[in-house]
Length: 153
Image 1 (cartoon, rainbow, N blue to C red):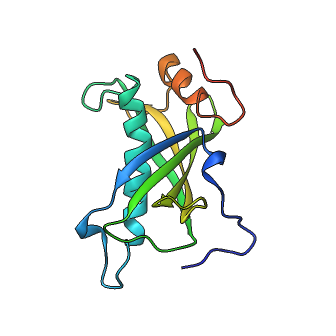
Image 2 (cartoon, rainbow, N blue to C red):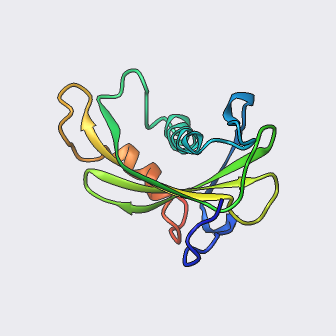
């Protein structure tokens, strides 16, 4: 696994939040490493877990939800079960109705990312699926994930 040589592997310090995650036996593919599609599940789990933990998302009842409209990932080094992993999470763009998350996956205690990716959520009304502004509670949580911003007290 390798990425474009122009994409630097980032360190944990580049991400305001670090989220421990677990690899599972079924994540490995026949080549003996975590399959590429599993990384997207790691991304979703890290981001949505942060929103749920902060009380900004109720998966079953929130009137506004985020739909993924774009995603991508670069792979630098393999990860395999039973590795311990950590997801680094940051917000690269916080718009009126959308947010771009950047996530890195770190293997064990390694300082550089094994993979780095992104996805864009567009906030929509749960019922109509039409774009709506980010709720203030969600915006406040996401603002804390923008690098260089001071965390709220």
